[in-house]
Amino acid sequence: MSIDTPSHPAAMADAPADPRGLRELRYGPVAMALHWLLAAMIVGSLGVGLYMTGLPLSPARIKLYNWHKWAGVTILLLSAVRLLWRLRHPPPPLPAAAAAAMPRWQRRSYRASHALMYLLFLAVPLFGWAYSSALGFPVVWFGVLPLPDFVPVDKEWAEAVLKPLHKGSAFTLAAVALLHVAAVLKHHWIDRDGILKRMWPAPRKESAG
Image (cartoon, rainbow, N blue to C red; front, side, top):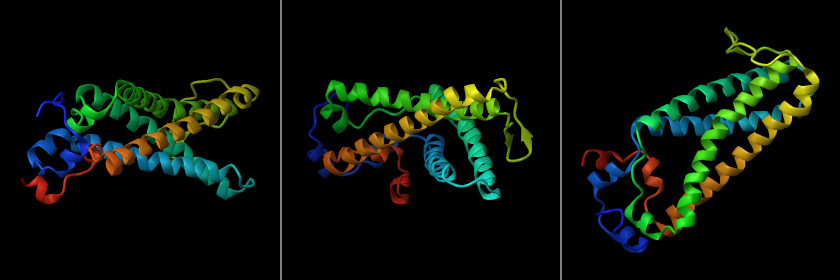
């Protein structure tokens, strides 16, 4: 079926499954692995970031700050890998039901939100890295690999500029990610058009089909 073929979502949901067609509409295993790994790490890093800022100065707070930095650098590297992979491996087409039902503004919002998330995947850890460097606290990845400070030490600039940028971009990423999840669940539960299956591993019986 062509992506331009008109089709109603409910009719598509009741149609018999086509394992071969579903595989062609799914992302590849590398893209799926990077997607879910980054999702888990970003949620965990945001949670740790919110929790640690309310703690008094203590060894536990310092340990959490280090873990947060290590996670941020890892997220930065994985995001770069994911972006390079995406550029070399275009995403699969939308399911025909979703493509037929989406108005133009939803398609534009879909593309814009993805572009914004990719930008924030890189910006949030970079702002955090710069903030730590400007405070005079070098980042030592997993306590083993010292990373370069790419901004000079300037505590006033760190607090006045870099901290708000890191915090603001992190909250923006959280908001865009929540909208992304809400949209996917809406397509899955209400429209029933197969959007979620694109990034969901295939069941074993379908993989063997």
